[in-house]
Length: 288
Picture 1 (spheres, rainbow, N blue to C red):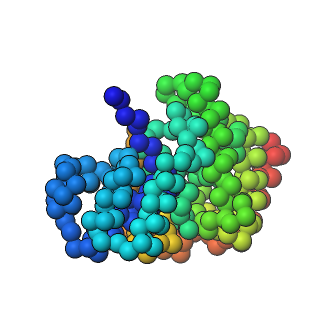
Picture 2: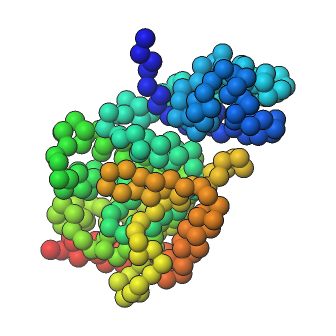
């Protein structure tokens, strides 16, 4: 029998985190729990890192093993049931590589997103035309259906900034992001206007890092810093490259990126100066 592939969801990520936390509170090691459950230790590792599917009967065994009360047990069992329900982006999963599926889950549950972009408008802020133009530069052409799905995904992600309960976002953009022509001048004009609209929202802060700043703290590239409400869910840094991504939540590395972002904010134009610059750049693209 071939088991269906595990696709992470916001609920499954929370379930994995809660089960890991309950095991630690119970004073049990992964080795001990795996032995009592009749599993390989690697299976428990995958479950606690949301890399493997977990059946409800196994959740029942785990909550019993961890000695949880009725209220906590019922909450985890309900969460387990929700974990099997697809998130909005699952219908597009064929267009999302596995390494990025993790980011979509994290972004969907984050309470604050901070980031620095050296080359591109952040995906969550891109217009359809800009996103299509970016994908057209890929060395290997994308199928048209994948392009359509990717554009739809980015549009839905953007609703996190504009919906009824919007996430807070603070982005620092290298000046190259708003100057380099992606697609054509019309595409860029529409994209800059989108940035102006988003940057004018109370939950979004935009800053441009001007060329004349010179060398700065993020010369090695872009990053996203994700914050979460749950005290058991540590902040995470996301680093994307051409064929994948890296995620870190090590305290010393989080400290480094927090400090880096503080330096960037201090060097960049203020939010009002940034909006003025964006209006100037939009006018330049519109007039040529």
